[in-house]
View 1 (cartoon, helix red, strand yellow):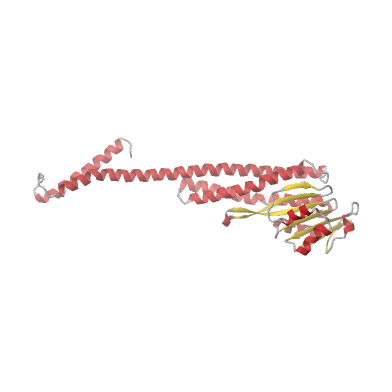
View 2: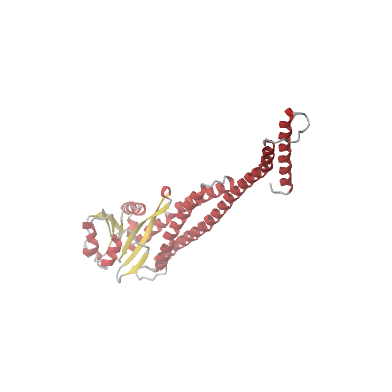
Length: 321
């Protein structure tokens, strides 16, 4: 699907085609072309109308690419990722958004529905100022909104981490290991997304390209600061979840040691009792204890109980239990 917006004389309207004359410097027209999951016929606008480099067009149509910035002499090509957190899949899903920025135009290409671009298309249809500030300012608006959408997902990660931490120390369970490893995969996915985006936006903030004005570079610095904070939080999450995994393994190990200690004490106490039962179960004559034949069972039972109590008392005295 293709959407085309044109801003002329301060008024923005949705149009059905791009006039090549609008792309000329000084035409007084600014346009935004958004290609969402474009068909082969719609893709031809990139090469036939805008005459973008074939390698850039190929990258724009590819499914997955790392964020990057390239300057082609008269236009800027930028790849960024918007995130779509899927908690049930335990990973951060990303969607490529490709930007072609020229003096008179902005072209965005993405493989499917983008929450950020859908919102911005609505803004352009209602607010002439969105495109009226120029294509570069519109690109900043889109990127800023994309980065802002990271915040709720990162906050959700923080809440999950706090909940995991509480469960590990209050209700330790061996099954928590899977949840911790799933969370660790989420954090790794977040880092893989925001680290290269931080570097790409940093180049825009440093004004390495003439198409980015000084005033816009200040705006991109603000976006870069947001990404730096996200990277810091991702690294902090990584450290915390590693510590939680170590703590969880220690808790499980301590529980196992406690169980093994109890089982060892039981086995140790029953060893002499088994010897006593074995002796009195032999078909040989043994010395009779006082009380006659009927009292022999109770003597043996009392002896075993007394021996077990004495052994348990000795273990407690040695602080083995």
